[in-house]
Length: 320
Image 1 (cartoon, one colour):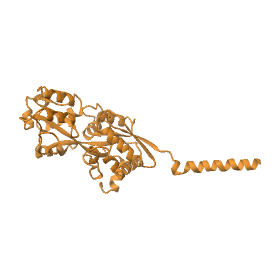
Image 2 (cartoon, rainbow, N blue to C red):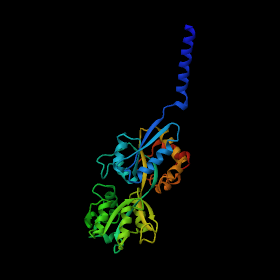
Image 3 (cartoon, helix red, strand yellow):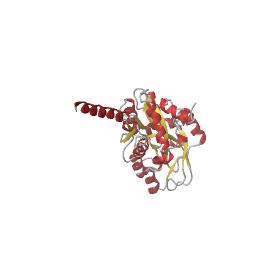
Image 4 (cartoon, rainbow, N blue to C red):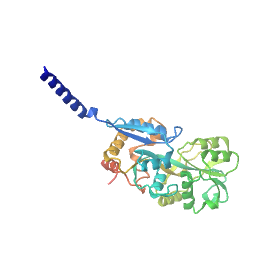
């Protein structure tokens, strides 16, 4: 009897070991994706990406709310979160320690480009070029914001300085309010279109338009600051703007940090693009995320590619 009981215990112990060792019972890797506020674009798309990536048997991904690009870059650099949404220009400044980053965050790594976020220079209809901004009251973004830094770069390429304008440091909401009260004549907005603040202005005021940037300026801007890509806002996006508007865009991208395992980032990308239909169904901007554009604004960026991303894109024949 005693021998039989010992045999049973041994058999049970072996079965437990076998079950624990089988892939079906392997522990999942939990992965967090920092997005933005729940009212923005990053959060719903981040949730859809997390859902798609969680179809991998070894990954459980979760989208977390965040304070968008600058805060997300700092979270990743501190290794407090594995993946984050940022604008590619902000990622560049973070890596180099410029603008709102007092020190370089050199452990950041690029993962994928997602979709463009457009520079929308809202103006009154009498303003036709950057030179026309001289002496005008212009909203240039909140002090220290990504919009402010983008405006600074664009003005520089246009041979202008902030001192040439009557610069007002305003966020999107304040820019719209000042326009309505005729207190400014132009304002920079950096966001995916259609942007609610711009829609509100074009439906309530008849003298509002968007600046159409010349091709040579867009080319020069991209040469000087490779994180800007030439793009356009389609005709009819806003009331009264009946032709396409040529304008620069920055890319919303995903970043990680250098110590995240190669295989995790490889599996993240492979599973995301294998299930990209889930992301396309989540949001209008989600439909712009595709493997074919996954390197847009990244291949000339100073932030290095993560080794897991390199492995994936090389496998797809997209990189040497």
